[in-house]
Length: 356
Image (cartoon, rainbow, N blue to C red; front, side, top):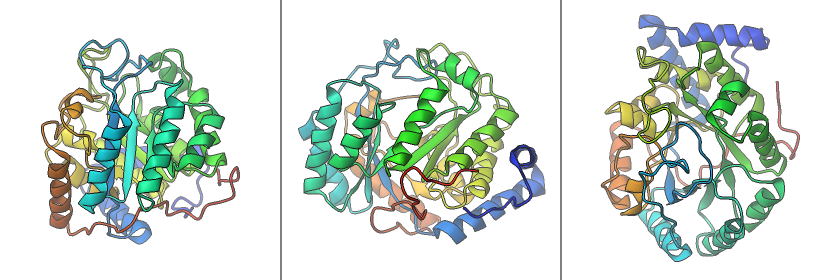
């Protein structure tokens, strides 16, 4: 990993990132320009496109912020059949824009894990050039290994916060140690691994935010997904405010600092930025992000997969999102990257990924 902070230990990194996260005016403009230059140098201008397929909103967890938490009565629960998922993947491949399908759902461990392995084998048999990312929560190492052997290329598992007490309050029945253990298992198995966090969770402090970035740097993730906390109806936090609601530019400064801290990680411009800002994902791509993730969930399912309110494109079809993606990237002067857009890192042997 290139070191943009050569003389800083962990405490020095936190202090430096706190300073950059507080940047305003010309200093903020300089931060965004520097992050964009680092993104260009390490990732290039071509944007990998990863199509998200939200195949189920069933979830056994009761995370306090999440719109599909088990106790939320608002969403109509669904689970796409394997044939429905295969048909959606066929549409993604036929669209010719996305080199990756991201299979995402709530967390429902159990017999469905083996069904998912069978689905992975079917997708790889029909679409061998398409990369597959899974994002379905905590699992034992042997399950991750089974999915890897069935065709899973990557796994996305955000840790959400580096503060163990805050994590425990927000995730009943789970611990930060459990989550980080899953991430270490994935890396040891040689799976391209994505982590990440929410920005502005109730109870978060700027020092927590700096700690989140530090944790991403220590893990040296292949991909890092971040996005603002947005209060969701039907959750215990529906009446809370984002911790940084009075400073919305901080969401983008966090992307910029993350890019400087993790220069060769894939950093997506996540959909949550568009939920708060009309051009949120465009702004993210101009200050350090380099990946775009359009929604490929077919109607009518996508309206019931709302982790937060205001999610864009819930009334559109996947083909509409594909056209929109091309147009947005064209307007930014950023071409679509060909191929699956695998990790930019030189992979160390399993279990020997670099850590500070």
